[in-house]
Amino acid sequence: MSRASAGWSQRAATRVLGLVLRASRALRCKLTPAGRLAGALLVASAVLGLDTRETLIYQLFGLTLGLLVVAAAASARFRPRIAVSRTLPRLASAGVAFDYSLTVRNVGAAPHAALEVEDLLAAPLPSALEFFAFKRRADRRLSPFGRLFWYPPFARLARITRGAAIATGVVEHLAPSSERTLRLRCVPLRRGLLTFEAVRVGRPEPLGLMRAQHREALPEALLVVPPVHRIAPLALPGARRLQPGGVSFAGHVGDAEEFIGLRDFRPGDTPRKIHWKAWARTGRIVVKEHQEEFFVRHALVLDTCAVGDAPRLEAGVSLAASYVMMPRSPESLLDLMFVEDRAYAFTQGRGVGSAMGLLRVLALVQASPHGSFARLAEAVLRDAGRLSGGICVLLDWDEPRRRLVAELRARGVPLRVWLVRGDEQSNEVDPGPMRTDPGNLRIVRPDNLAQVLSQP
Image (cartoon, rainbow, N blue to C red; front, side, top):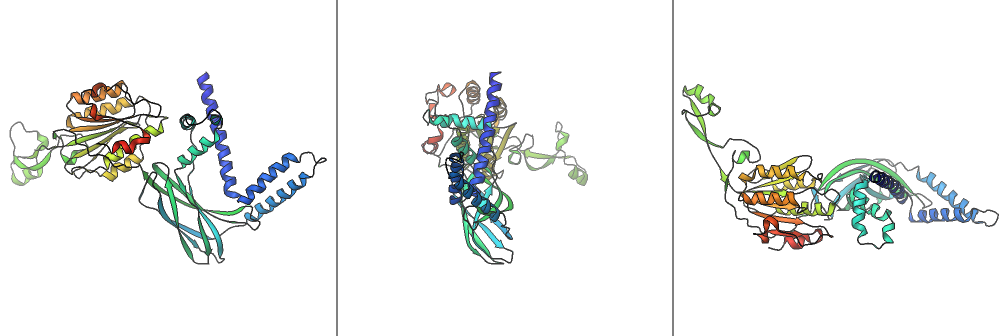
């Protein structure tokens, strides 16, 4: 009962914080700096001027209120006729600023001067689970007094959830039937899909207290890929393995091999290999002959079971992305394996898939529920016979993960194991199944990821 009560109170607190944040955003967009000063004066005079018989401050309240009402009425008359277009790059990288263009065209008969142009992103609010996990991490760096204030970390997490910070542009003059192209700078704050909703064009009303604003819908999306770091070359010892299905079936389950020709039917051949067209043409029963293929194949196993621990998941995804983009032999295959609602495997190499394709997949990877690691382990062990080696990016070092590593090593699969630890966790871990190969058990933290990856 207490856990249910705590969950209800956390959800209620998150809703209240969301309402305060939305109101704060609306006022910040609508009021100019002078308007914010007038609003503060309005509140102060309302509090201090309650007793109209003892003070004349209520007159200041009336004057300020009148000015704000006139400013609101003046700002409501702004209806510009404009057309807006946006030119985005194909991809962006988390934490790396980029410039893009926004073109504003005046399709009306009236000129416009000093227009403020702001590109708007979708602004979903964080859930209670996300906020309180974020707040627990933020509280470790704050004093006991600072932990009492919930709004600053909520606003900071909301900015990250929105996805990017975009600078506001200014158009000095826009004549009729003319257009201006602005260069805006965007800094992605997270990987994933960046959703653009609209463009807001505004200007101060005559009193200078409020902005007259017009919103032009312009939906568009941009994929932000995880950051990629320079990584030291990795040479895993491993032999070429038989790949049932050949290159064209590298990412599938099947029994076909590479086709090399036709031959006469022999007793014991399966009817499934009969070439029916050649039989009809020649009158002889012929079958298709295939050649089995052997080549190097590595697995990149990404642990995504980190609900409520976003920094470790993001570090793991960035680590996996660094391996995906690392130069490799064109004759080898790389299988990216992870689990969300089910186990996924994406293959790249020898004409199958591409590194950028895997990077796009990693940009959208989400945390999976606790307990789903068993599905990932099952999928990895099912394909272990085809693997020449593997890279495991693990977010924990519990019994199920150590068991997976032990079973892969027992099947002769050489491994490099990366263990992503949190700030509060110690670097001292029992190597377990990696005891005989401690050099390939690496511990990394979100704050030193780039430094550790560059070490051989």
